[in-house]
Picture 1 (cartoon, rainbow, N blue to C red):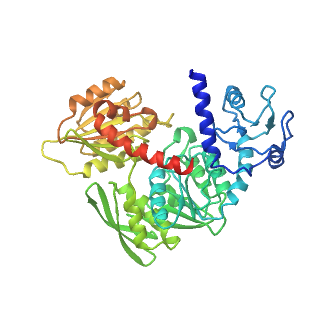
Picture 2 (cartoon, helix red, strand yellow; picture 1 turned 180 degrees about the vertical axis):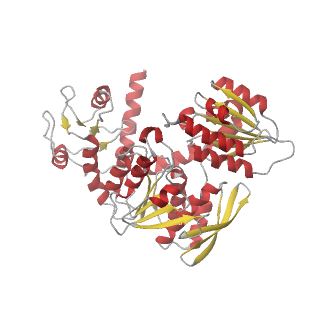
Length: 493
């Protein structure tokens, strides 16, 4: 079988698998045109049922309406039509294909997805914020799924387009819907909220992440707060009382705050202490005191767990089930995970980075037990989406490193070289530009009983350094990911 036939076979097999989980009672092209106010295209059966509204190229189904965005090359649309799409929804005519032409493709997709979401009739919890979205989402999912059947994507698929795909394969037996929402695109949270109409919005914090795309902290706040755009006045917003920007934000809905330092918050954590590779603490909320434990380290995870606790309490989930749900959470892959290899402890957090999350990761490393003679080593890669603000961000990172107790710093990439200029204490420090150079440096400083932090934005693929230098730890980290994704795929796709 040649390559083209193999690809065709696999696509057809994937289409048949996806088809099982999609309703045939979707739109016709005529109905699409009526919904979005577009002229009916010629050269296509207007009353044929579409297999799905294909919101992004990664998930395609034959006989779909393929949504083609202004940012994409026309070749993407041509590929979709060659693979069997019935029509395109786009902002301009492409070749002689049947096109549903609209001025605003995202706005039109919004109109198409609203009726799908309105059929759910179950409580929806949407989670957004600068840092900690995925962890908080997973905590909430663990709590709610321990109580009743819950639909929640285990990945961090959080764009409006991805949410559109989720709505078309929704688990009809689910009693709750938990969805992470990206905040880096100014329209993403608003579109997602208008479609999902969440009953609870959880905002982890409002930090400088994605400031290169959004331009200012005010714009970041505005984009994040748009998660409430589709909520009615009876909705509830859960916020972090210790986060300055969250405190000064205003909402039309009732807010419930969680805090550690702000003892005036609605839900307050105290007696926070390490418990093995995890952390335990007490919470006081609405006249009730509880003792909670989670399996990940770091004070920042206390906020995430508290938000899940409050969300569970709002739906009268018994405290014992909330406690059990929080303990079920296990980080996947190289997101806040701890591994041991060759006598070393590896703390891997390679999925995203910001000045705030790097400080939190350094605090985790600092609070871990330190054996005599061992070293604490931090490998820091470039931070993405901060163009124009690099110097300020990396100065904050340097301050965090200077205040920490790490013994060795290795920076990797291009921009992290700035960190070295701002360090205010003597520290053994190296800068590397290539993966091979980084791996060689890691091998030169690694040793038994040492502890090593890997932290960078996803675009740096820092997990590859673990793969090359500590392959056993890499396999141990990836195996749960493959198993979890396989289970999710079998269940929903």
